[in-house]
Image: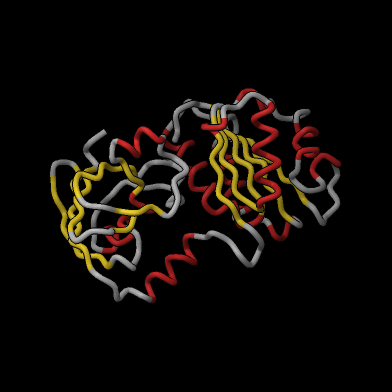
Length: 251
């Protein structure tokens, strides 16, 4: 959840996909915010979204810091060569004040996530402000896109009646309980709903579950008390009852 002003993102390879959405959303909507990205890849040629990240750096020169770490391509500065692990983060303290961040978003392999989480906690960051998404191996991950593709193929289960309320208006549609998430389904039906990362991290698509039941794939943004109060991330929610009513106007 975006609650502070100074943010850190640590990503490796395709782990940049959910992270870049959070970075763009934060820089564009919170004018006093700043973001530092530590991004690991094999080589410059394998950097995903390189041009987009460079454009962000040029647009938000004073607010966005982009640090590349390459594991298979020698760099002019040794600090930019290697893998993102505990030792590398120790080295990066020459460039980055890790104690200055309000929250961190980490996405990549298990080993990197554990190392980064441990490092940041030792640097003084509260565990509740460290959000992560795990990619187990390059060929096996908890990617929501892959999960979604499978779920859309088996879109033949029981259907639920979904009612979405936003800006005082209601929007109704049907959705298979074995199909896509509520946010994507509503967007396909033409609803103009708020969202940013679609990765369960930024909390932009947060809404109140007024009635019915849903299940969430992941939750990196909502606090336990918010879940107890009935709030959900619509980008991660699937209906589990015949009728579901969701209200975006409840804060």
